[in-house]
Structures are given as structure tokens and as C-alpha cells.
Length: 382
Image (cartoon, rainbow, N blue to C red; front, side):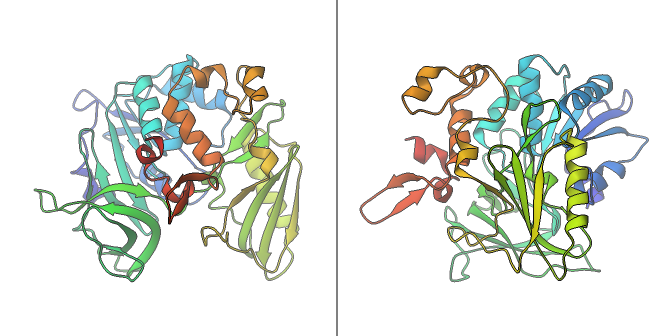
């Protein structure tokens, strides 16, 4: 797949003057497709650096500043974190191109990245079931789907193909995996079908991921509060584990419910402690419990990877300037100085993530929560 896509993506930034330095900022502690891509880049053309999202910020910044990448690639959310550090003056790199994939590139995230660097952004759509589903370059109104590598079906609730401009569920069949073919697999993502492009490829106009999860609040060993990216937990594994769910409980505790055929508390604890230690939160207390099953969220029909107590979402966990007391007194969400000076859209999107179950829009015969219409922020804002 990487070989196939090589000719379709921009050429190396430093070509032909020398090798192109590519920085990867992703989950790197397990069997991830992004890590596979990094280690298989041709060494005569690229120098690579893999930095884990579990590494402490100081280590990440130090590694990247010494490496000075021509190209940065990672999740939209992880690259946005780097961009925020760059805007704050704590990270000094100047990438010439950005590649994002793995989670949704929202307008707020795009704006943050563009504020930090003038580099063009290549937005890739992929999944474990098929590494390359689509790509959107700067200036493209729609995302081009890789019809020659996959069969795409965008279906309504009755499993009928939707018309251009309508939203439906993505079902894929990959055409490149002969050993383990994936046939008509429902990804869980909702997309708005686009028109056929002049190139002959089909397109999509927007994506509403079906696998989105909250970040898990944690407390670092030095007392600072941070969040553990859901990407660090999606591949959480211990021998015998069937499913796990992480619940944050105030003031500073995590509880793990897990489903398994037998009790494996020690194995689950060892793996979670390993992840916490990598992140610099080795002292974070947590408990584990084996349960018969983990129920799906009645609102979404999906099992939530991370569950936040109501009290866990009242204040931002990332340490910044102290919020103004007048905002709390009037019942409005408290924002840090850095957030206030940043994008209004980014602040709005943060509230959407925190209060996904609250009413966003209502008509005479229909009501939608923020989660229900999160793919169309402009509608909510208007």
C-alpha cells in the first residue's frame, strides 16, 4: 500500500538536495500501521524519527528540535498539540509539509496548525482494514477516494446507496489484500457522499468518525494534569483480555473494567502501569475489576473506551493560566488565557467534545445533541 501511494503523494521535500527528514508523532508502543509505514520508508531517500504520544512533552520537544523535520506526520490531534507548543514558543521546528490521519481534521485543528506553520496539510483517510482510503490536498474541496484500491459503499439505514450530498455509513471491500481480504466491512464512520471527480474517482465531502473516544485524564508524577490520548488506549492489550473500559473518577483515580474468561488483574495492571510510566504518571492510582460484559452506550450503540465522571469535565485539565473568577461566577466555562487568545472555533469544538450529550439544535419534530450533529459545526454556530 505504501508503494502504491508513493507516486500519488507529494515528492520528498528535500529532494534532490539530500535526504528528507520525516518526524512521526503517533502511538508507537504497539502494532500500529503508522509505525510500519515509518520503518519501511526507503532509507536512501528518508531519515525518520518516531516520537511516541506517550513520551513526556519535554522529551518530545527535545527530540524534534534536534531532528528538525522537513515533514511531520501524525494524528490530527497530535500534530495540533505540536502546533500549540509552537505557538507558545516552546517548540521550534519549521516543517515544510504536514501529513495527518487517524482522527478528524476539524476546522479548529486545521486553523491551529496553519497558525503555527505555513506548511501545506495533506489529509489522509485510512483504517486498519485498508491503510489508504482517501486523500485531500490543500485547496481540494472534497476528499478523493482511492476507488482503484477499494470498493466503497456509502449506505443509508436500509443499506441502499445514498445520493451525492447525503450522509451514509461507509462499507469497504479492499482490493489489495489477497491473504486476508476484507469484504463489505462497515467502518462505523459516517460520510457525506460527494460527486464524481474529473479524474474519474469518487469523493466525500465530510467525515463523522464512528470510533471517536474521549481522552483519559491523568496526573503526572510532578503533579501536573494531562490527558492520555485515546490512541494510546485503543490497542490496549493483556493476554486473555477481550475488552476494557477506562473510567476517570474524581479526584484523581482511574478504574478499569475488563471482560475476560478468567481474572487477569495482574496482567491488566502491569500493562496500564507501563503506559502510565511511559507518560510520566507512574504514581497515578487505579483499580481493576473483571466484569461479565461491558455494555454499549445507549445513545450511540457503541462501547465507550473512556468514561468521564460528570465532575471530570467541569474544568480543563491542562495546566495554563488561572481562569478568570467572573466566568465561573456566571456559570460559563472557564478558559485559560492561551485559549482565549486562540481560535473561537477551537474553544467551541472543545465544549462540543466535553458536552456531547447536551442539546445543540431543536425543531418542532426533531432534537439533536452536539454528538448528533458534530459533523456540521457551521450549522450549530449559525
